[in-house]
Picture 1 (cartoon, rainbow, N blue to C red):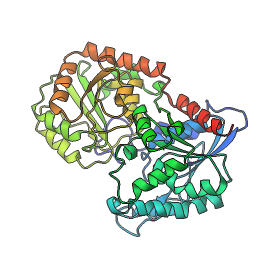
Picture 2 (tube, helix red, strand yellow):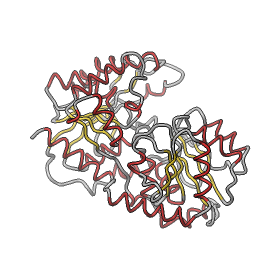
Picture 3 (tube, rainbow, N blue to C red):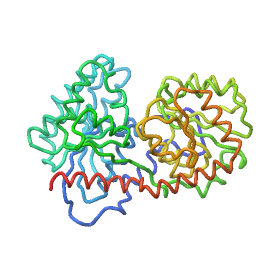
Picture 4 (cartoon, one colour):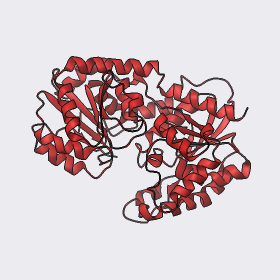
Length: 427
């Protein structure tokens, strides 16, 4: 992912601190011999073509590998066409080093358009990837897939052949849109949930949905998180000087896909008529088809368009969090968004919609403000009230940081929870 604008920090070496952490920082790893072996399936995982893709899965598996679990990762990739879009994936190696583990990229047929052929793609995964795993990996103690479908479904034949425990993770979109999938996909989700040893959901809201679809006793909430030590909040003043942002300005940050699901259309609707003095907007996105609409709305507003990015490094992103005052997220659907954990880690207040697991993260009126989804006028009113009171925003940001620490919402705690679940299955 390349940045659409230049900025003061290097965005070309990402995952810059991911690389430092991924290739060099093993302070939390134990010296003890590994207690058990994990085979992880993660179709959404960074690679050298797109080092930002599925970073939350990389962070989860990296954290798990820094316990006394030995982790091997298979991240399938579609067969690449000889030319045109996606042809660069033809140069992707069969395996890449991601520090604590190697990521293997076996190929399968991923047919487009997705809305018609997603079910067929899952069948190709299930036909091709288990054979690759059989030939290239020692038999693990646990199979852990970062998504119910296609990862969990695709590795079912391997799990069944060897009688292995299977844990599948739900992050939100798949279960939130259950029943709206392309032909055959919901049936495959059902089959995977039925076969899984454990269904691990990032929010209690998702867990309730999962319990309605399978044996409730196998469903658990296993939150992800963020690491406060990685956010340079003590450098806020210097960072603002570097970017020529006034110390008095209220910096409002959006991080996410430029899409309707994330509420970008609502933001675009309110910007031209918004009256908020001393306010600086920063939009950091990754894909989505509403970037043009957003930029047009900014051009029609009184706000600067100098900080709209189609991608920045994680190192730069954490600096943006560190200097931001308020994160906005008017989503229509969510699991438990990583961006809210990151806001809490960086003492950034949150204005979001009360969808999915967001109310489990944000205490309304204490660590942020929650409004109903699909009510742009309500969102705008809440926004204007917040940006008029910087002291209130600051108190909410501090309270969010305290809540993150109190709830143990860090990657290390996430890994410990995963390990407890895995090991309990083998007792």
